[in-house]
Image 1 (cartoon, rainbow over the protein chains, first blue to last red):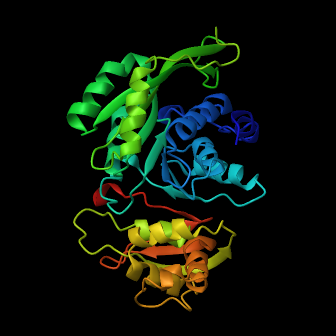
Image 2 (spheres, rainbow over the protein chains, first blue to last red):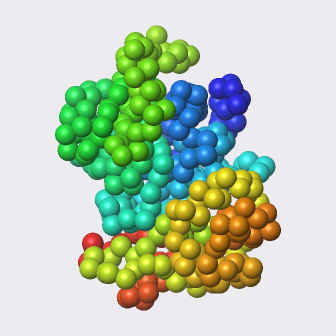
Image 3 (cartoon, each protein chain N blue to C red):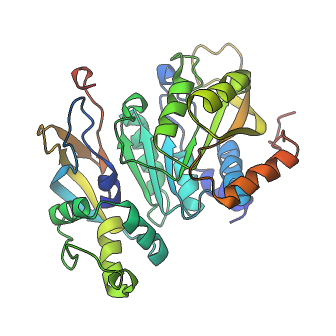
Length: 238
Length: 123
């Protein structure tokens, strides 16, 4: 599937009706989501044939994209029943049933769900502006799912903090920033003074040991040879 | 909720030792098509707990033709794979409960979504 096709399919995914500020519910736009997922699949083949867990699925954007790109089993988790309702309605828009199951659960209670194991975790977690440490809690939960690789969007300002935590505390064998993006949030929250806010965001790829197959290791080496930062070309983001 | 997902879930209340597999009380079941992929099925077979899968399949009425133990030949047999595929990926619990075998605690399933949120005293 081409990026254009994926993007077009994801365009109609509905955002939150009444976003909850405390949970940092902002939608992952189709622009960012389609590019992120397309990169994951075309560069690393980490979606097709893989069990994918979407942590903090919100409106289901990443889960739906992963299903469209050929994951045969997507488990999409969120702590908010209202968000999952939106996500489920979004799935129903598609003619063929999508291989996605939703689970209502708390990321902080995931450690004990020991049998829930993913090949690939994909997430756009809260940045930790409302609930301090939420971004790290999500990363920790992601690691506890025993995946081979984790993809996450996090604020660029937290880059060195995340790198250190991933490598030194969470046991990741590698932590790479694949790209920098500008995440444009329209004034979805009542308190925003400006019409929109630009946030600099990193697309991370974390690898966990004992599953770094030759192909995975080679891909990481390839990334290191390429420029470490790519600006993803988003329209109107200059 | 498909049986594949059921296979991954357990009762995670603090202190519970035998919270797997969750028993299923099914009130409403639906069937949804899923792509048939024998390679995926064979790799899933290695990763699931077969006994727990049978418990789930029995509760959802799709255990017919699924043996207590699966042989290597069966994993190559289209007839078996079709039944396995159907039960694992196409039979969905829409309304009902997942029940902890140790404590009896019920995790409701509403519109196919299991509610695994724990209360404060269970964490």
